[in-house]
Image (cartoon, rainbow, N blue to C red):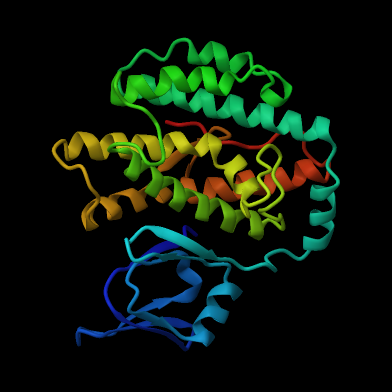
Length: 296
């Protein structure tokens, strides 16, 4: 079953009763209930929201990713279940002791899948995808000659124009891309812990100050889905240059968009769980390839 994404933006009290999440708004509106088992992802944007400890325990029991936003309404921190798999210790051991050749091969697969999806997106919006398909087919172990960077130089300008520069603090729609990537990162981190993997130990990213290196690795082929959502928002709201509630709600829909997965169509959030499960199997040598989605 596809888990729900819940978004709270007004002051209130969150608690649990009879396995139901209960939201009691401060403005006197009707109390709302949602079965905890139906929730996969929850965003708390208002700093006047209070959460009870029993609810946090119940959310973690169901592996719900909880994202807290800062005073500027930007996602800032995550709450994740650290006991998400019955073989967690064994999978941790396999992950930590993975050889460099294995990690380089997994990174090669990851970069190739990312570039292939970037090419699909360019084709989908009517832009020339070349030479990205060629670059995707020539990625070497560990991406030693940086095909990812070569593709990026072509990719961004064909989506958002020649003057666009992808930069975290750059001009619009960089802020929208940042928002979508943070939501995606939380979804990937949730799936990693659910597959028994430790999000800090990456196959390529290894910044000592980054607690989600593996999430940053595995989300790479999924970034074009966020890029597509941002492109759609820019087409729909050509005069808007800052985020508002409706745009954020549209960005959250990226988690339920259909993707191609092994000749089947699945919601993105479900595809992520297949990807992380296949990654765990690669670490235990039960599989050789990570299952990544195809943009359709």
